[in-house]
Image 1 (cartoon, one colour):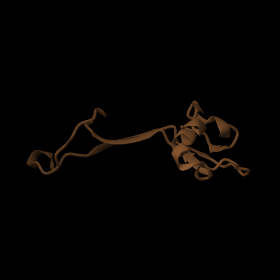
Image 2 (cartoon, helix red, strand yellow; image 1 turned 60 degrees about the vertical axis):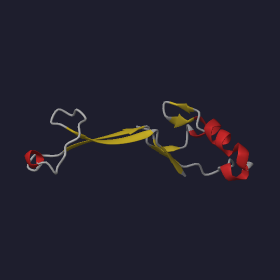
Image 3 (cartoon, one colour; image 1 turned 90 degrees about the horizontal axis):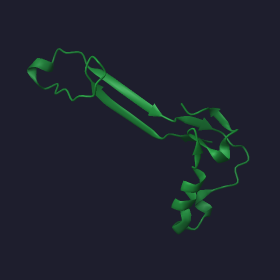
Image 4 (cartoon, helix red, strand yellow; image 1 turned 90 degrees about the vertical axis):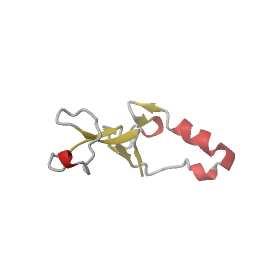
Length: 90
């Protein structure tokens, strides 16, 4: 079982959704409403019951390259697990 997640970003915004920093310690900002924006890219959950590929079984020097090769993706999905997603990446 595993998850995929390309990126997650969390920002303070103005009323229009534009990113900006609001210093809440400043007197003029104390009563203003706080707006936040959360962006999640390619979050998915997969479950493979017959997993045979294990990174830790690879030589330590090759683990990074091995992980990258397993994460070749199509539309945010791991190619090896295309039919094993419980929640397709959003």
